[in-house]
Image 1 (tube, rainbow, N blue to C red):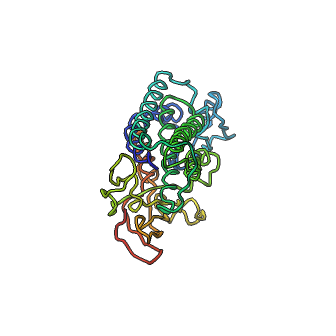
Image 2 (cartoon, rainbow, N blue to C red):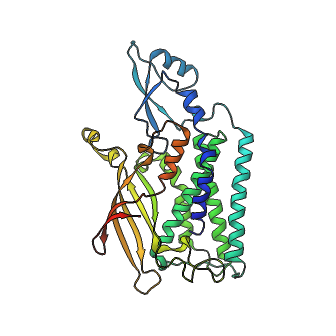
Image 3 (cartoon, rainbow, N blue to C red):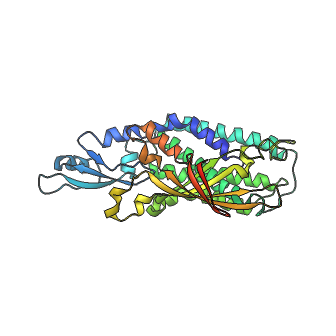
Length: 350
C-alpha cells in the first residue's frame, strides 16, 4: 500500500516512453490491406478478427504467422493471437532500450527504497517478526497492496515491450519484478515495528500474478480493478505512516479510497443483445471504509457505471492505446449508488 501512489506517478512518467512499443507491430504485421475489425486493445482481448485475402494469407504463412487462406477468391475472417511471440519479437530484443528500461526501473526502486528507509524503517528497527493487522482500514489497505503490485507489474511490462521483448516474456518478468520488490518491502517491514504482514504479502502476490492470470484465463479479462479517491477528514491530520510526526497523506487516507471491480457487460451478454449495449459501458462494484480512525469504523459498498477506456478511446496510435490502458486503472467520476449500510444516491462520486 505504501508505494502504490508513487507507482501511479511513475506510471505516467513512463507513459510516452512505453507507448511506442506497439507502433512498429501494427505497421509491420497489419498493413492497410489487412482490414481489422472489432479491435479492443491488448488489455481487453487477446485476439482480433482480421479480414485477409488469399494472397495476403499466403504471405502471412510464409512469414511464420498461423493464418490459413480460403479455397476461393472471397475474403475470409481469421484470428491472429496478438500475444504470439512471432508477432511481438521477430526483430529481436533491443538491448539499448533494455538497458534504458533496466536503469530507469532500478532508479525508481532505489528512490522508493531510500524514502522508505528514511521514513519507515530507520528509527523503528526491531528483530524480524510477523505481524498481521486485519482490523485497521477494514482491508482497504490489502486491496491497495493488490492494486499497487498490479500497477508495478504493468509498468515493467510496458517498458519491456518497448525493448521488444515478447508479450509473454514481458508479462512474466513484470510479475516477477513486482513480486520481488514488494516482497523486499515486506521483509524490511519485518525488521521494523510494523512486522512482516503475511496477508499484505499474499495481496502483493495476487496483484503481481493478476496480469499472467488474465493472459492465460480469458474470462478474467472481463474484469478490471480500479480505484477512485476523494480526500477525507483524515487527510492532513496527525497520525500518518512514514516520517516521525508525519500527517496522513493520500497513501494512508483509507477513508478516501474506494476500490472497484468493473465488469465488461458486453462480454457476458448473449450475442443477440451485444449490438444494443455500448461496448465501453461497464458496471462496477465499489468497496470502501468509513470511520477508520474511530471505534465505529464500518464498510461501505457501491454500485456504479464504469468506462472501459480501451473501448472508448480510439486505438489508432500506440500513445492512445497506452493512455487508455493507464486510464483503466482509474474509476472516473460518475453517478453511484451506495447500497450498504444505507442507500445514498450520488450524482457524481469519485
